[in-house]
Amino acid sequence: MPRPTKQNPERGDARNRLLEAARDVIRTQGFTATTVDDLCKAAGVTKGAFFHHFENKEALGVAAAVYWTETTSAFFASAPYHNHSDPLERLLGYVEFRKNIIDGDLAEFTCLVGTMTQEVYGSHPAIRDACAASIFGHAATLEPDIEEAMKARGVTADWTPASLAAHTQAVLQGAFILAKATGDHAIARDSVDHLKRYIEMLFMQNGRKGKPQ
Image 1 (cartoon, rainbow, N blue to C red):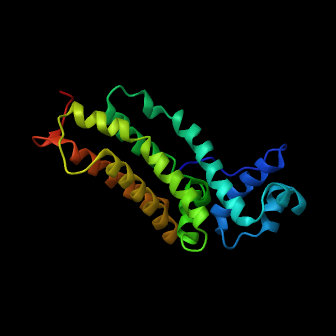
Image 2: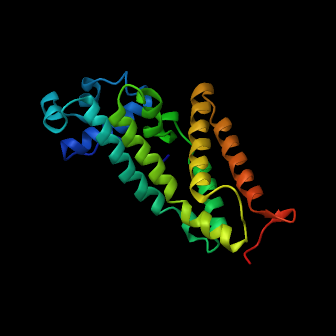
């Protein structure tokens, strides 16, 4: 999902600095391999400060997922794809925007909650649930445009706006995994291009992309 980029934690509140450190360090080396000492060092705080704000590393993981949701929601809310008047163009613009931010180091464009889900879905259900809320909450922001595009183009189908929105996230998370497996940004961008083609085909009418009716 997003993409607040890696940066030095801002001076100020120790809790926010730890959350920023978690965002960056966990995306780089994973949740399991990340220690409390790693987080404290990256945040520039003491272990006493860590345990003042978080009972344990799992509590930090849950809070990091919530923080990720808050910061990425603001990031996507201000993205230019919202400026399109046509809902389908907004949806396709979202996909293109996701492709364009596949840039920089792997840890800078891959998804914190996706990374944690893959690691801890069985061992840390509280983190898994927080990550699921983040992923599906983001997907839900696409549903109004999908529903409006279906109505505008007279599309009736055995799929729902919610299922297509969830599929976009499945493709994006899979694209991140391919990029991690190969170290190649291009393979992730190719997957997003296929997602865009797929969405265009769903809204095809009479062999061409349907126009609003």
